[in-house]
Image 1 (cartoon, rainbow, N blue to C red):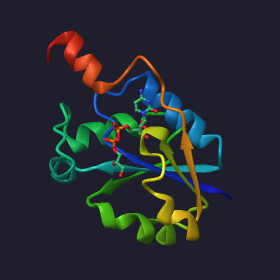
Image 2: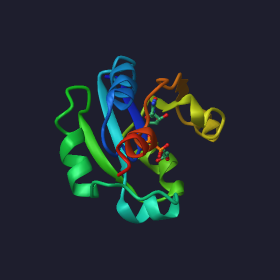
Image 3: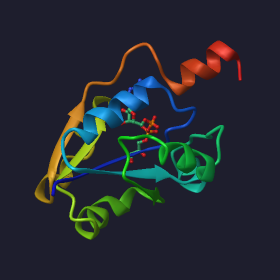
Image 4: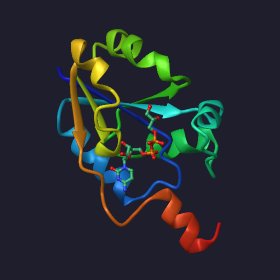
Amino acid sequence: MKTVITYGTFDLLHWGHVRLLERASKLGDKLIVGLSTDEFNAIKHKEAYHSFEHRKYILEAIRYVDLVIPEENWEQKINDVKKYDVDTFVMGDDWRGQFDFLKEYCEVIYLPRTEGISTTKIRTDLRL
Ligand code: C2G
């Protein structure tokens, strides 16, 4: 039973997010998503359009996602990897290198980002 984990805000869920979740889910049997809380987004200097509860509700409807947990700070990843017995940590490669400290606890994989789509692009195009 291989467990995979990834983290993010996943606001205005789009096909780039889904492609990341799909590829991550194929690396194991169970995919956990650490979803940034509204408070943590403030620390990331991000303001999501949808609330944490609504972003969680949407993610839980995605076939590739098995469990959604709150991401409340930068420090929780090592504890999460131990707590959920995670085998593989996955992030888009815009984060390449940033989480290599996890390599002593689990496999760390950075997947190519999907070009041509982003939450920022959606907001800009719609002028939200
Ligand atoms: N992503 C992607 N392609 C895109 C947009 C996003 O592959 N076109 C990936 C990102 O690389 C990330 C995930 O989708 O792995 C979620 O993206 P965001 O919600 O923007 O996550 P972010 O704000 O980068 O938060 O502790 C980690 C942070 O919480 C990551």
